[in-house]
Amino acid sequence: MASKSNERGVEVIAVSIDGKACGNYEGLAGTFAGFADSCIRHKTLPGYYRTGLTAEAELKGRRLQFVLFGKRTPVELMEIIDIALLNIVAFPCAEGEAECFIEVKSEQ
Amino acid sequence: MALKTAQEYLDTIKKMKPRVYIGGKWVTNLLDNPVTRSMVMANSAIYGLAEDPAHKEVMVGTSHLTGEPVNRNLNVARNIHDLDMRQEMALLTSQTVGTCNYRCVGCDALNSLASTTWEMDQALGTKYNERFNKWLAYAQANDLAVSGAITDAKGDRKKRPSQQDDIDTFVHLVEKRDDGIVVRGIKVSQSGAIGSHETLVLPGGSLKEGEEKFALAFAVQNSAPGLSYICQYNAYSAEREACESEDELGNPLYGQRETSTMYFDNVFIPWERVFLCGETKYCGKMVTRFAKAHRMNCGGACKVGFADLIIGGTMMAAEYIGVEKIPHIQEKIIDMVRYSETSHACAIAAAMRGREEPKGSGVFLPDDLFGNAAKLNIAHGFWEIIKNAGDIGGGLVVTAPRLKDLDDPEVGPVLKKAFGAVATADKRMKVAKFLQHWAAGLHGVGTWHGAGAPQGQRFMFTLLTDFEAKKKLAKKLMGMKDE
Image (cartoon, rainbow over all chains, first blue to last red; front, side, top):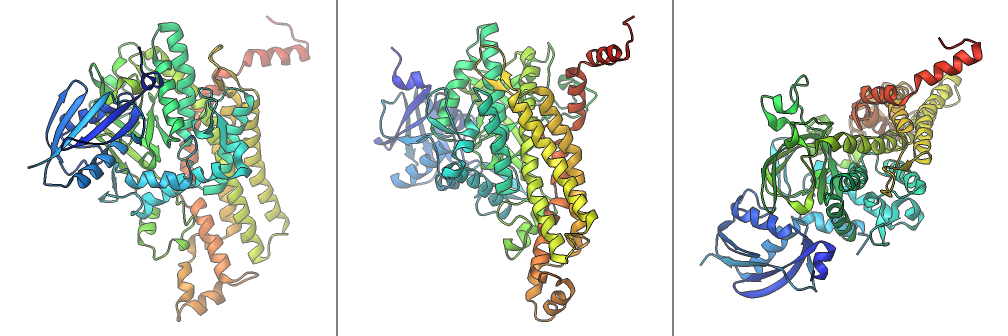
């Protein structure tokens, strides 16, 4: 059975930083695919073209795991992801069961 | 949240980081660069209009998807009233910002998509309309600023897209993947994408069998990786960057008209955002439907709003030197009104004679002939209007020193003596600068080419006019028999 977000043509993306859940974002269906393409093929995040932020990225089904270059606090990482998601027109949302997952780590 | 406030729009744009180049540098923040800021502030003012109860009828429509109020820039016209309010919106926004409503092309593009994707689904069994409606519902729910990109770079005009030495002169398909497509190529003369959330990309013209890879329509987020914007740069850009105060400029807050060249360097577009991919037969319809909407709005209403501003400024210039009652001055001002109001009448007629297209789609598009008449009339009329503004405004329109020079202890008193007349020098110079913005700015050529150069409208006149019927009428009255 299709979920409510599927019926509306949107998808909910859950973001976690260093294993800790940090919030959900809603975007048009396909937003997660665009974000993953950015990390894997372009090796960057939307809105951060010239900085080459992503060190490693791996996509397993609807779960994207990646590491950002440089040592950053969880708050700094979240700020970057928030801007990157907004730059592909996904917005924070309170409700909804996530279908996609973005797991971010800082370089150790 | 169905309607964003101007401030809410600005809050999102502050975080948007499209890859924008202007005048030798990359822009890191659209609001820090004075030229890109003028574009964003114009968009912000358009959002503001929808907040004003006085403009609600014009600026706010009702979503046919949800029944919720939506900004008219994201509304699909479902009846004659919608078409009429759409053209009134073009008039109001131009009167308000004196430059583009940068959501305007996106609005006309989405109306063309609503119509054409419906027709494709009916004929081909595709799911484009369903996809498009989901995209539109999302755009409406978040009141996104959506611009439109139509014109390809085109290269050698004698050659078809696939014959070009460099096919990047046309946006084209590079790869089809399970999750979407990869596109590359160049769109030019694009208004206001830099300060939008998304851009609707349509084919630049009709395509033939064998040209499937150029047959693309999609929505792209404006910071999608691989997408770059190379902004126009001209004397007005340099002046805005160099001036000490924007109050000295002809259009202080909103500037001239900011466009960019959009370069798609292998940009990924998820399938959910793809509304045509390979169906060459429908490209011509998609572009023609866009054009008929845009010619009504851009030609018959937007430029009329500009004309209102120019006429107002010209009358002030006449009054400030005491010539407003001279017959030939009055005659020239009446001519300016004649050119502009004739075009507006064509826009209103295009809306009133609008019809559902195609039947059953529920989408209303303006009458083609009147829309083309609006655009063709203003393309010629606008030159006359700015000619008369320059005539009545006088040489000062292009010879005035800086407004700020009036404050200089040495030259200020001389300038006040030189340019003081019925009104003080500062008023005369302010109006002269305002008229310079129009008469010596970018809007003459912009009006000529915007929504398609006049040759396009002449071609449509040839197609849409039943010359044989006119000959028959004449013959009948003359008593001539058909051979």
